[in-house]
Length: 385
Image (cartoon, rainbow, N blue to C red; front, top):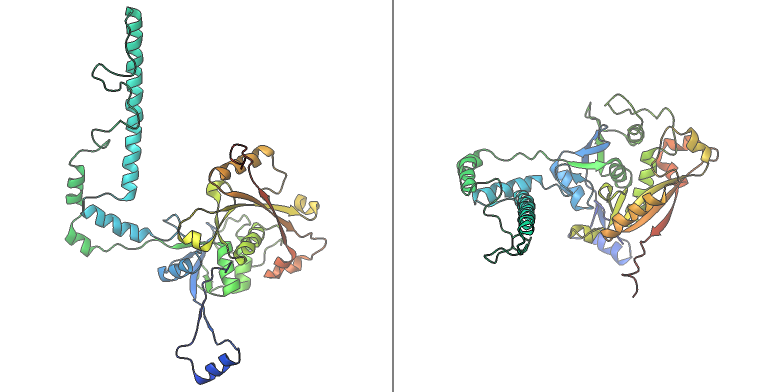
């Protein structure tokens, strides 16, 4: 599976005589076009913000890196606002308004059904006291006493007036006023620390800027700042000095090992907090078509030397043995949405075997290893064939 990359391979056009000769000899004349994007380090959110939307769309379209801070995935806030304005001019509703209207109608249906059930119960109780026999399903006119979701229809949208949409369109949206007030895009692309370092270290297509000075940070400074971001500190200014206590179980290092592993294999790696996991894996084409992810990743750190865990300043999730109830819950959640759960065990090298000096550069990643265990929930009724 090819790795989604922000770099583009191009052939020179038109090729020169020398390039044609090199092509005949089997020497590639392909050129690599590497974009140069800039992002600002934000320690509070442990992320890098790409403020220039041109850079943001390059990173998104050439590898699906990051997410819009005002969107679910692709930075689309501006497009949604423009679409909402056009819909309002035409008297229509945006998708958010349609969803709100549907939820309000569902709530009103439940209230009407509860009232009808209470009225039917009271009438049945009165008929029983009088010795009469009545139907609790159909009224004398043949209609259902208790409405069903298939037959119930609201008289009008709950909480609205029939003329609300027209008056709202007339009062709030004036064509001349819209032309004078263009919509300013306030969205930015938000990269996780793992995504930002992957783009910086592997492709050299991202420059990380200091949020205080605006200066571009060197690779060594970014390396220190990303590790210090996981060290509790009262300051919001990124610390560019080496961590006071270097540790192989720094959360940035452990999570980056997993992110780099799957990204290098061609997967699109996204945050999986919605499904109680660390990462979700998408195929590049599937993510482009908004198809659901196939695999859910849980990062499970494993200490090569248990003594390192006892002396560590970090409390990594899933480093200690987890309960079967937790595992069954996670597996069931992901099985219901047709995802295969994968436990990625990251072996943290022992400090007694590897010197802490190795942590001064990304070369330390060579000392980590990953083992994967695939879990599937056995459902007898579905797996007989």
